[in-house]
Image (cartoon, rainbow over all chains, first blue to last red; front, top):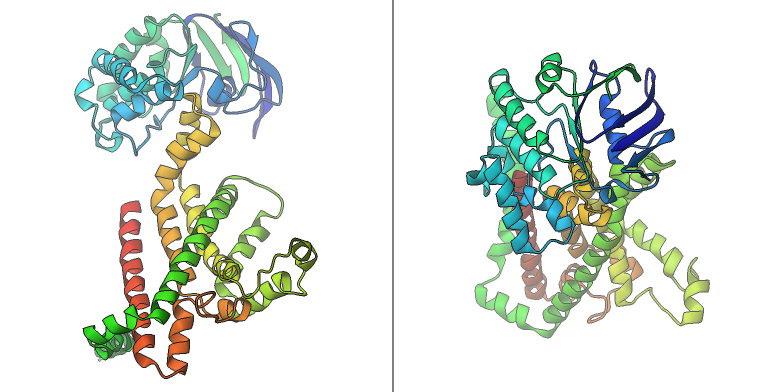
Length: 211
Length: 257
């Protein structure tokens, strides 16, 4: 469970959010520029709130740096490491946790298999299609069993044709997770497709909260 | 008509650069080159140059990398000033740099009260050669490294952090590999500038064979003593290295692009 009660002054408005993200998927919806990404970055520890706190499973995360939070983040443009191949990207979080090299590869391969991209293990991100990048980003985020998963507009970089398929796949993978998952989207078709609890932000304030 | 003038102007400058360099290669027979380069003065100068530039490069990397990163990533008061200051040695005449270093590390320099009790003498020692090279060479590295770090998208460092890598490991595993062509290119340039250093060295370190006499100083002394073969053999070594440096930086630039 992620408990959030934070305030942060943004350029044209104040982000002021108090809500709770329970186990399973919650869709964080709202128009572009509503403060959704900022809220995700605050939860992940990539951005600091002016006031307030974030807690994960009851433990406050004040002062805990991003790299010690065990919260996975799927970036909008994926931010796959261009100097590493797919396997290097997916094993990155395992390497950070000191998992032995052989185990890393095995665990990463299991995820690549599951997402149907095992054949791409040695490919560089630059050689991948948008849908493939999305799957690699997801595998990289999940391979080390994070305690929460945040996805920032995971379908925005995809073209219309692949969007639906990838969304169905991602939904299936996320549904199997037993941790809080927050998926940010500005797209109402995503909101409808996930049929999950929705927290809706507008200009920094919660205007709808199913949680 | 204009096209012809452009072609002539271009050809004149290209020839002006190419002919003297080619003349260096033409001056010495391979046998004379081998004889000059095997001699004790040449060997001593080569040794001093390799030793001092290795040290100045190491100091450049150790001190320049954090500075370049901070300049690329952090906002702090006086940043623009520091940025400009670091570029200054590129345009300051080397002889002036040498004099300035004397005013700090010389017998009556600013640092004398610190150095004297420790019986540390820096001016006119091999250490002075290293410091002179650091002063003139480091800016080339910092400049290039700063640009390289600035070009690394922050989202890669953010991604590394959310995957559990701390700041130092993120730097080593993400930032440095992504900025590598700029770092290596800057290091090569800084090293080459240090290797060619003359003015600051002769002012601040002197021209003592086997102690502070680097390749450029030995070229100068060879010419002054009438040993043209020694001077041109060492000059050939320096030009050949310069050629390799130009090729290397081009290759690194291509890799970066």
